[in-house]
Image 1 (cartoon, rainbow, N blue to C red):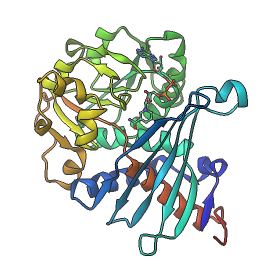
Image 2 (cartoon, helix red, strand yellow; image 1 turned 135 degrees about the vertical axis):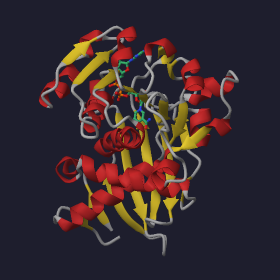
Image 3 (spheres, protein in one colour; image 1 turned 90 degrees about the vertical axis):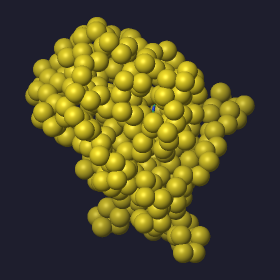
Length: 321
Ligand code: NAD
């Protein structure tokens, strides 16, 4: 069994490897080769923690396992460690033997950024120039850094409920040599691609804040009740997701479907576009929206990729288990 500690991940995993792993597993999900197991998420009644498991099996990549972890709100204050904690466990699908244990914290950010980037790569207009960010927290920086690699963006515009956090994304823009402008939400109409990644429970982005031809990646809504965009926007857009069942229950589409504005059958898997069984964007004016809810198979895909890299580079620890 191989162990890849959290401290090794930053030097091993690249954004490119995360993109490839997530793109492959989305394709496998859409072709029926990979499926996610039901998610377990529990308030454990200790330290106000939320703990759970996200697992699955990818028959094409032969990746079987789960991510265990969750959110401990007091970690930073009491222990000086981040509040989100997770570990990925992989198993040999031929025997059921444990094959790897991998730090999952940085991988979670990389796989989430890879998901929106895969959507941008397949659905944004080729001539997209302006990217808009809604959110400026931990995930937002990963999202922006990755997205900038998938179109020749010339400008970043950003809005955040807490404007004092905007320098986080301004820094990423300036590292890429791009101008950054803080805007009010109607200013998002200038953006060709918009990523939302907040922990909001109310819509911020309204349908009239979005211009024709925009691609949106809605990444923050991963729980029942959360919301980032006006449901009318989903009715106007062609809607894609990682997994339809999650999109309608815990994703951004929960609201539009709940209000009867769209049906579950209006939502397509991004993997179908990757596989060429869905045409994806069909005109420069079309608004496309990716509802990225986050699935366990993404975690397994990036963990499996990093184990390969760690073994190649002699950084994986082998234990007799
Ligand atoms: P963070 O705490 O670092 O940042 C939170 C962001 O949300 C900040 O920009 C903050 O200003 C904003 N925000 C907070 N309350 C808000 C409100 N009421 N209205 C609008 N904005 C508000 O968190 P993070 O680690 O960047 O995560 C952001 C979100 O992404 C979380 O909701 C998290 O659950 C979600 N997430 C999704 C996936 C996925 O796969 N889809 C993966 C990881 C995290």
